[in-house]
Amino acid sequence: MIDIAPGSEILETSLGVLHEVFGYDNFRGPQAEIVSHVGGGGDALVLMPTGGGKSLCYQVPAIVRERAGQGLTVVVSPLIALMHDQVGALIEAGVAAAFLNSSLSSEDAQRVEKEMLRGELTLLYAAPERLTTPRFLALLDSLLERGKLALFAIDEAHCVSQWGHDFRPEYRGLAVLHERFPQVPRVALTATADDLTRADIIERLQLQEARTFISSFDRPNIRYQLVEKKDATSQLQRFIRDEHLGADGHDAGIVYCQSRRRVEEVASMLSEAGFNALPYHAGLDAAVRQRHQDRFLREEGLIMVATIAFGMGIDKPDVRFVAHLDMPKNIEGYYQETGRAGRDGEPATAWMAYGLQDVVNQRRMIDESPAADEFKQVLRGKLDALLTLAEASDCRRVRLLSYFGEASQPCGNCDNCLTPPELFDATESARKLLSCIYRVQQASGTAFGAGHIMDILRGKATDKVKQYGHEKLSTFGIGADLSETQWRALLRQLIAREAVQVHDAPYNTLHLADAARDILKGQQQVWLRTLADKAAGATRSGRQRAARATAKDEGVPLSLSERDCLEALKAWRAEVAREHNLPAFVIFHDATLRAVAARKPESLADLDGIAGIGQKKREAYGSEVLRVVSAFV
Ligand code: ADP
Ligand code: ZN
Image 1 (cartoon, protein in one colour):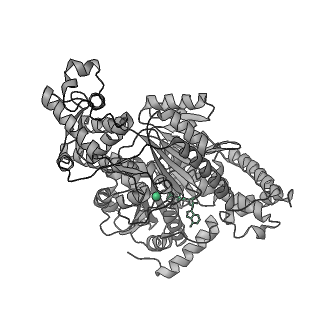
Image 2 (cartoon, protein in one colour; image 1 turned 45 degrees about the horizontal axis):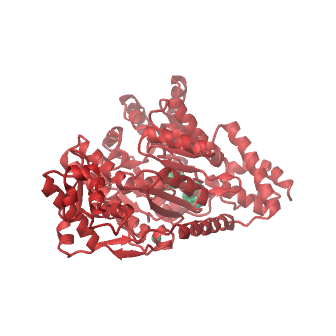
Image 3 (cartoon, protein in one colour; image 1 turned 30 degrees about the vertical axis):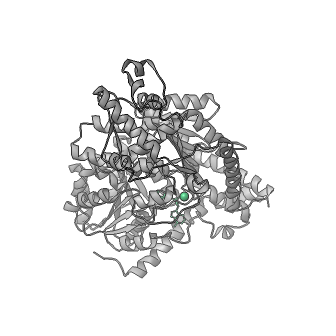
């Protein structure tokens, strides 16, 4: 349903809004097409990676439609804890916005409802459970009757699907929007969705008629590094020290752990080691959680150690690294989580340590879950895809993107591209491992776990080995040529290839699976990395750090006095942010302040064309910015 004006005219109006309100010159990638389509009243499903610029895809059409007299845009968001800052950012830009959620007092909620009914709002953010109450739907009815319901934007749309990694049952109720308000256009947005989830979103939200916009999922500024887990917490510390320690403290980052207990452990371990780290998980008191999130958004250089309960919608632009201490469940989750690094487009790292135990744990969680078999099968397939990524010796990005259906060339910015691993033919060893698993089970009538199998292969006559007489097996001691680390790496690969299965009952035992046959028959080769040389690793990270330091400054090279000016601007911004109770980046991004420091404007007109300074911000802050700068001119 196109109901305002032809596409080109809407695009022109939208560009005007982009410039005037947000202070940007051009739309990025598919934004232009999306805002024209949505602004013109079309339905859309937008798939764009984190940091791609989804917000503008509904905020610009909302403003365009409101100015054309079409009334309110309702934004559905599951992120109650972040609505305050998101709305704050819009208000800073001069847009009439508000939110409705359980954090408001009933007087405040009533005030917002009145503003909405009086037509004073351009955007209203609401949680799905509130939106779908009969009372709220009746309010929307009355807006519709007066022709003042312009658009529904459904953010984090993957929450509607149980195949997504963040299923929220409340999202299922959103089908009512189409049923009850079929004439109101809808735009659904998500940063992640494989084919299955995508189809599910379309069906659940009844978006069959919507145009789908798929952006490239590549985030070229993120460097992927997946390392083998040995002593994960010391590896993590080394990673932060080597690659994310600047002259004035460490970078802001997120460390994901699997369990609450581990979050607590790692957060205190990092704090004791002198890092500025805070824990975040669902077991913490809600007020503590909110406080930690606020500090992460508002302070510089904080490390958030968290379960996956943390991070959706976190739009802090300068998160420099995301580290996974445990392997996530699937690639969607992994990509979404790592995507929180480097939204500002500057270099960032996605680091993960994974090991055999992760694989075993994840399998067990699937096996023990009460889900239906068919569902478990999907989960296992998704886990396997992640495992294959972790074991890959070729470009990580090529594999990640191909998982999302995108073809690409080796990236030059992942661990495997930067230091191609040396491989050797380990087919013979793989056959030894497989036959050992087989023989042991045959001889004892029961299966054993990885540790025991490795002891037999490496010829260790432990008490357990002797107890079962396994030192007499023909496979005893045939694998002394490889280290235990190598055997484990080999085993992980065989699990990833479905040649070996790990059964949780009775006790993480190893079993041969279908793909074992081809390897045993010698019809399939297995390649293994030679063990990494530690010294080479150290010089490499030194180089990376140097490269990163220059890259950071290259955007706008600043002289000494410009740096002082930037510091003064940041100090001024911190004050404003405190007064307004908002994160500093909501006032101005670092990049905006850097551009100001480099340009040294002397009049309001000089501020024109600096990205991130719209009309309202120029009026509100322009003269103060000039005052701060004047000391350095
Ligand atoms: P997403 O929601 O897709 O993760 P955001 O909407 O938060 O991404 O946008 C990411 C960053 O990119 C924000 O800092 C935003 O201001 C910036 N941005 C988005 N679109 C543009 C544009 N057209 N020009 C300049 N900056 C943009
Ligand atoms: Zn690569």
